[in-house]
Length: 116
Length: 114
Image: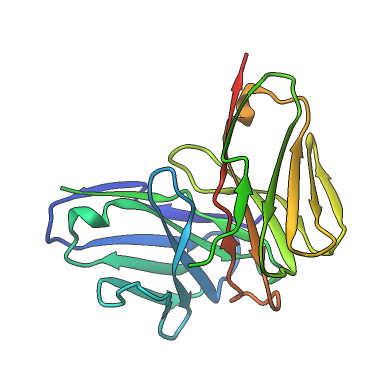
């Protein structure tokens, strides 16, 4: 299957600072990547769809100025949590489809953000 | 966002027992996927289903795409301790292009006792 990698896996930051999370497709090119957020003991909630070379598409209720997404190349998408607050603490997971475009979605390892 | 209903929500079973969980939706899906998530990690794809009525196996795992396209089930036979984790179903409607979004189930937490 396709390999998707995230970095960092864990990050702790102070309230008010910004944090960048990277998502890379290692063995395929991804024109589209997806960013999910997961709270403890809950399911994955789609935040936004990251499109290479164009603006991201955000789900209803997700602040685009708060969660900046940049998909500058076919193998890299970044999520920046701006002016982070404790309520932004969560597990952020990215995903992408393999080159075939079939339904299978492959996920990164996830990044746990803790805002103090 | 929309979620699929999974049941049971959690289950405790003994090693060696078979496990069954299912996922239901009010909407029709063209693709059903089953994932397993270990604590602190991203979900890992277990089985993908593309056709109504399809029955697919992956080792001790078997999953079926419901004939109505509104449900799917996952069976695990002869469970072992490493089967512990959270299992999520996911459905996809519309085409299967790279930008198509998935809707995730609420998850089934499986715990296996020796």
